[in-house]
Length: 615
Ligand SMILES: *[C@@H]1O[C@H](CO)[C@@H](O)[C@H](O)[C@H]1NC(C)=O
Ligand SMILES: *[C@@H]1O[C@H](CO)[C@@H](O)[C@H](O)[C@H]1NC(C)=O
Ligand SMILES: *[C@@H]1O[C@H](CO)[C@@H](O)[C@H](O)[C@H]1NC(C)=O
Ligand SMILES: *[C@@H]1O[C@H](CO)[C@@H](O)[C@H](O)[C@H]1NC(C)=O
Ligand SMILES: *[C@@H]1O[C@H](CO)[C@@H](O)[C@H](O)[C@H]1NC(C)=O
Image 1 (cartoon, rainbow, N blue to C red):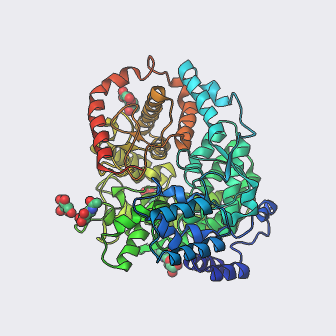
Image 2: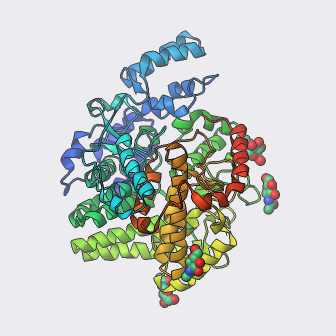
Image 3: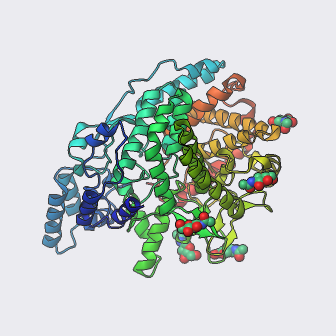
């Protein structure tokens, strides 16, 4: 555990670079004793956080990001820009500017400074055509319908648009960049997200595997392993300013996917040291005790606003009277970002214990989330499974025990007999949160339930689905049923959540659950196809109320691309293609069925946009 303690210290003292350097020299995050890709890791083994003094905290960041009127439409733009001079010179010269301008530089002074000291966003990356990209991947053979097959080909083409490679200079001079150096090229989500994201990559990698691109998939997994070796865990995305938070831990699941496709057991066995390390990191840094069980919450370990949404966080922070209360608010925001669901009423706890409110009600750290605990259970089971391949009986027992303890906690704290489903748990009011969130069904996906109870759980969960009328939405199962204007609330539908729910029902393996699973998978594919047919875009999120409608709301504009949406569709075209036709083209009967909803949805979207400042 001493290594993990070191990492915690290291994270806690991030702004103090002297301490950081010392900690690193005493004890690197992980021993590389058995690793064959040690050489790759060493290539990029410079301190990946030198540039944090520019991009994570400090006067320069604060002054630029809070300039009035704002300098950048999207706060993320500034922290993605490359430095033209070393961080130390940049800071010294900025201090000189501040002194010369009586600490109140004008907006023009700041723009001039940015233009001299920074280069535009994206200059560290080049477009990259994956070397293993194939014109006719085998999944296309599983789609008889010519329109859907054509769509599959176009989705396969999009991998080439989303491929990015770091320029050599990033590896040579990482302190000039906010991007975290990794050895292999990546597939990015798209839109404003031009670097890798942790949990997005799970669905991207599955899409790549279905597209016969095993090398690209493996390269991305190796990147993550290299990051765990260097810094102990995987940040939210590939930027230094994400240093205090991770995302739902799915690296072990990525390795499992890769091994399922390639039968390369040795890959899993060689990954074990890193996977165990990531697991222990997560459990140790996110632990809570509830009703005598050790469970986990999403929790960030840095200070200050989110650098990439600095202005927005400072604005909501203004509601709080004290510095401590503001700091707590920033932590709640970043912890919600760690969950991947930034933002959602899922993380609101009002004074009266309900989920009503706004971002000032975020209490992410006090809510025990169903998904995180289910995912960690899955990680422990998979680590045990990989150890079994290696014949390491003791380790199998160790990780089976960890999994069983988590399962007991999930059953006793998160399963809710009355609701007939799992529910997040509110530690402040010591009660379950009886609100629908797609992740309430996530234990089905990773089989984090007692298999002997399958029949009972299937009945309960199908009843829960009926009570919440989840089958009534033409555009897929919404993430929640609360319409707050936040992007992870109604009516938005997200590919990963659709995937978790659909694959979860399929895993239940009862005829009724499998039936619903297939019906929802097909509805999702057809609705995405309709949206694509309208404007040839794949979206970050979609609209539950509108067949073929895309999502909106939250902090930034509509994003297209889009990695995880493409991954899920490719997988379901492969799995269900034989039974799918496009219903007479461009939506067909199903589309006319929901035409009456379209008007309502359009009004909702206009209202949402009118009510929020996008970009
Ligand atoms: C929970 O964790 C604590 C501290 O690591 C440990 O002492 C305790 O035995 C654990 N409880 C359970 C139920 O596993
Ligand atoms: C909780 O408080 C909100 C306002 O803060 C109010 O709109 C809502 O009706 C209250 N709910 C309950 C159940 O008291
Ligand atoms: C959020 O809720 C608080 C408390 O109810 C309220 O004071 C504040 O005005 C709300 N903020 C916004 C942006 O609606
Ligand atoms: C699973 O269910 C069976 C049958 O109800 C029960 O005997 C067993 O103890 C359960 N296991 C766990 C871990 O709850
Ligand atoms: C499967 O779903 C269809 C409608 O989608 C329904 O007609 C049929 O009865 C269902 N079968 C089962 C076993 O639930």
